[in-house]
Length: 413
Ligand SMILES: Cc1cc2nc3c(=O)[nH]c(=O)nc-3n(C[C@H](O)[C@H](O)[C@H](O)COP(=O)(O)OP(=O)(O)OC[C@H]3O[C@@H](n4cnc5c(N)ncnc54)[C@H](O)[C@@H]3O)c2cc1C
View 1 (tube, rainbow, N blue to C red):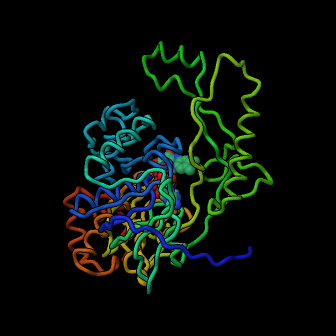
View 2: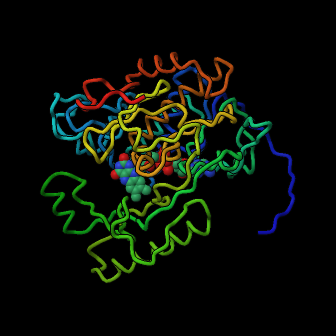
View 3: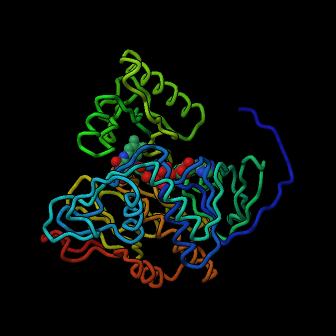
């Protein structure tokens, strides 16, 4: 592509301690954690609701937050947001997990579905009432960098182009957009052909009327139906990047045409597509190449710089500690990430990108951003004992408890 030089003076908006780009659940968690640490926080979201893939993307399901044997592993803000997700809407939380703890040995999982729309409304209420400055319909477009430091975010919105100065910037775009444009090393992912929407029809409405459960009124319709591990990926279908406008458009056009072809011959008056996803349902687009990259080799490994413990949503019992180094890159002192773009490779990327770990890494990123400002140091150089103590007070598990390690396993270092 040809390039042109373009210079423009940009209005400077209010300065914040912490600016968070992206209001998915990772970004919401980061904003809440930094705000609760007493910092002024700006949260910039390009769409018109909070929650990202979990709400706008119609992915209304918390994968397991427990180890599959009765222990709630992902706790803290994740538990708080799970409870918020079902406070005003339907749920499928097993009775044994109400209250957030089950008896040891419990085999049901700590999981729930939720109303994506009602959760989005509740998130807005929470974020605003806690004093976070929220900008909807505002897209981050570029970081302003000087000597490796990010001075703040340039955004595009109905107000035009603006610069938002900030002390620390959290990249919660899910696509590592801030990091990439700041020159931080990143890794491009690839994505299968998945496009899920929600429909209603007369038969499902009758089912809901009979059961008294509104969620029975909906059923899923899809364009591409590939699973997260690639089953049902059509032969010859390309993988999608999710980091290029033409690639995303191709993904959307192909999926929307396919979905229409699936439903166009149904009786017209008896069904409707109730809601289409408002963002591309792409899982692993781009991530940080961090100071450390988590892999499945690290299962049960103990890290001195752990900022939380997560479980594997597929393999009962498997636990990972998340090192701070998966959120940072040492040469970039005031940039940190969370959610889908933390530094994890292969299947470990899948384990870290889902809702509960995204909230956990968001919470850690917010705590660390606030602490780096208070300690006047890089995000990668915060006093770790203090970080871990803060997160532990917020009910985050920092290290894997000995009794949850496999009997034959010695602690990996
Ligand atoms: C098909 C699919 C199925 C899934 N199934 C499950 C499941 O069953 N259970 C589960 O727990 N997880 C599931 N996940 C994963 C999960 O939904 C997300 O990965 C998780 O919510 C992590 O979110 P995040 O906050 O990191 O990113 P996202 O949810 O992607 O949030 C990023 C936010 O940043 C905003 N943004 C992006 N660019 C900009 C910009 N330039 N300026 C401003 N804002 C911007 C976006 O609008 C969005 O709100 C699934 C994902 C997919 C795609």
